[in-house]
Amino acid sequence: MYRVRRIYHQDGTGWTFRPDSVIPLTAVTCAIEFIPVFSSKLDRTTTTANSMEVCDEYYLNMFSDNKVFHTMHTDLM
Image 1 (cartoon, rainbow, N blue to C red):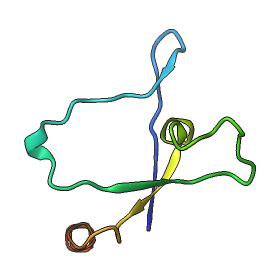
Image 2 (cartoon, rainbow, N blue to C red):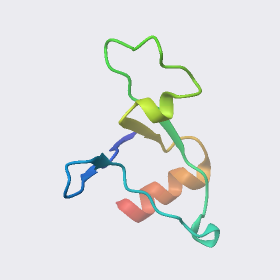
Image 3 (cartoon, rainbow, N blue to C red):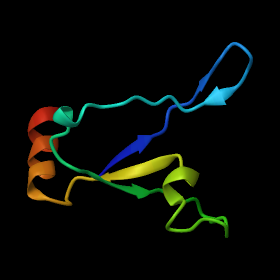
Image 4 (cartoon, rainbow, N blue to C red):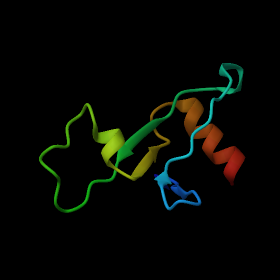
């Protein structure tokens, strides 16, 4: 599995933010599955509802379906 990480930026005032963008639906070819990478100590406030917001690193599950697996191996290798 590949590991991916969030990107953070700072503006001129020192404010840290996560950049985002709108992706056209026509650009989406398939859904992918991210699995949060948890540290050795898990915060008790982390739940299934907020784990994608709390964590900064994820595993990209390329074994979730056949199309994702072949796309990851043919396009990146």
